[in-house]
Image (cartoon, rainbow, N blue to C red; front, side):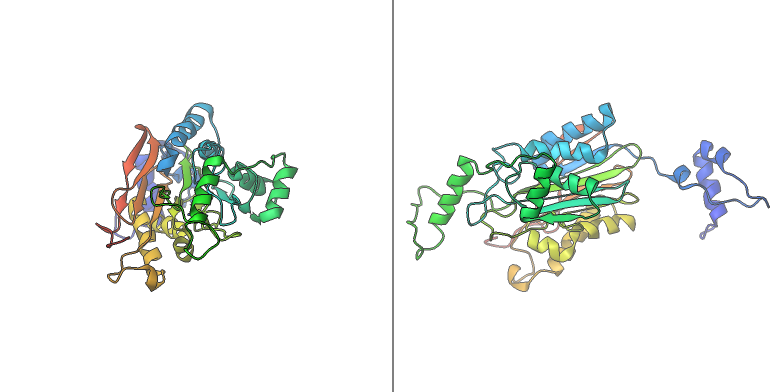
Length: 356
Ligand code: GLY
């Protein structure tokens, strides 16, 4: 074939690789090749589910639903993240999530469904254990995409969700501890060093899935930054930041410091990179580079390395997957024909700056 193949060259070479396609191609009245139906040229896809490491139980569940029960990829991904949303011992997601500075748990979530090109999201949602399911209701039952605060809660109640107390004793104690140590001049007694607050400030779950048809979906859900300013909405429910799906290219999602990701629209960057031919891992690294480039200088060390963490997870239409973090030692969850497992993410930098 020449270096600049005509459509006919392309169709013939594709047909040689796929005999069924060759025989199915129609001819026009004058014998010219018509454009092959898109369906016939669709690349083969291998079912795959990829998630942040806290989704290790979820990727097993999602793959079972897709492979053995024919579940839709979004329904499967939502069942995956609900495991964490409903787990009172996961302090970063759903029920049991760490509260904001006022001691109130406010949850963010979003979902995207590749085949129907629809999305739904909720922000600062109080009292509902599974915001991912509320986001799916917004997607399925309205022409809108993003509901926040009381409006999102009222909407959830209309669909049968129950308002419950999401603040577990464990999360409340951690919040009281944070408040006690806030600063030496506040009205609270400091808590002695013998009782240090050892919690991590962030934790979110993203899960993306593709089935054998190449249909892709993604969901991200979080309780957001612990002790955040009341009303703060992070990157997780922002389409293009916390997640992005294009059924022709792939899906990407993010965990880590949402403010840095929002400035980069990193999940969109990763999906567009895959569309241009990058591997999922390289696409995640590209999104990280964009996030660093878009960060305020005072959040970076003098040599340009970030003092914060951000992570991306990506899945191509074919079922290839990858993940990247700022620094080594980060893992993610995946489930494909080799079964559910944790894998090492690529790192943008070989080491952290001092003190980060
Ligand atoms: N990435 C989660 C958040 O910043 O809220």
